[in-house]
Length: 103
Length: 167
Image 1 (cartoon, rainbow over the protein chains, first blue to last red):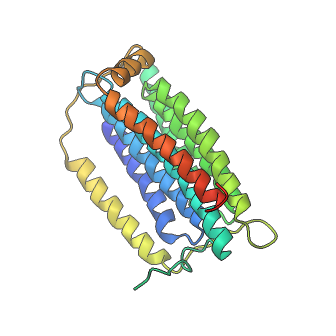
Image 2 (image 1 turned 90 degrees about the horizontal axis):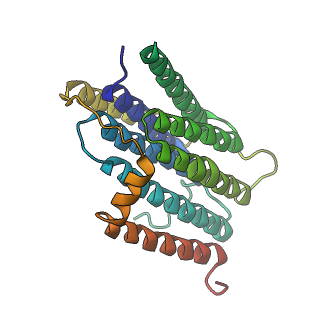
């Protein structure tokens, strides 16, 4: 049986779901960042799969993936710097304790 | 024969990606999570190469399984509180999260299965020059915006990490 777009989309959906579970259920801010990275990768798989398996005429999907990867890497750099800063200021990176802006 | 091999490779890569991703979420030790995340990114890179996106595969290897993994491990090491291996605890909303994830998967499966998908496909013989052509002609504006974003992220990360007066 040939692998088509559906298989790639389902794989990406599962990876996204696992990342979402990590984001929602983890206590450590770095673990939450890892979940976000998994979700970003799932989206990139979707871009590339659509570019490969639908009738298009150029590599726009792959180019958008290049930009998505750029944004993702910038995001993780800022995220780690923020985590370090929060750890320095508060001596904790538990996201449950960071509730100063709670109404 | 070729078809069968391609199918086998896809399923093998899919199993590696999903197993390592589950390991990232479930592992008790945060360093193991970071290591498994690297393995997951390598799997995604192989999947990109399987999808005839060889440049993106190389990019994934270099940026994600190289750069992001090292950044995350540095983050783990710099924010360790107690002695011993850094833990990776769940918060109190495991079941809510599981419910939302199952809901998400149901919606996605319904959408993917019920949407008619046009057949066809596109394989570029030379992804690097095609991407370069598009990036420097038609998509020059997003390219420049991405460059500005990277500069801003660089400065922001330095200022955040060094503190107000020092940077």
